[in-house]
Amino acid sequence: MLTAIMVLMIVSSNAAGDVLLTRGMKKIGDISALSPVDLLKVAKRVLTNRDFMLGVLCLSVSFFSFLTVLSWADLSFVVPATAIVYVVTIFGAKFILKEEINRMRWAGTLLVCLGVALVCIP
Image (cartoon, rainbow, N blue to C red):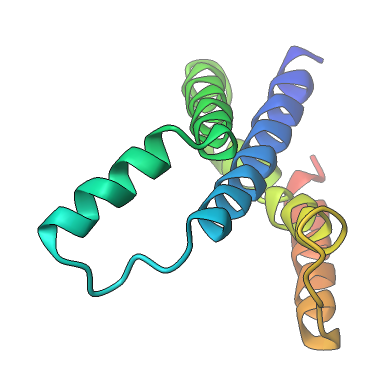
């Protein structure tokens, strides 16, 4: 039971972190091919961006939860079980970031779901 709760925490905090980081970086804009001075300005915008910082916090929670679960559960269970984060993230992209998700991406997400289900069967 505790393992399932921790896997849920890993998945939810990881997906939230990815969505928040993406939203934060989209607000900041393209950062490719910038001079060192421009990179410092971008770094300031990144570090003062609420979505970015919350995303880092969520990903930190996910990482440390993952380490905790690995201390008592089998890696061969934990990694596939947490792979459901790909499914949760695509829903975050669709409904929070308002991304268009094509049929191939939905099909790939369905395949991930099926694979996770197969691996989690005892």
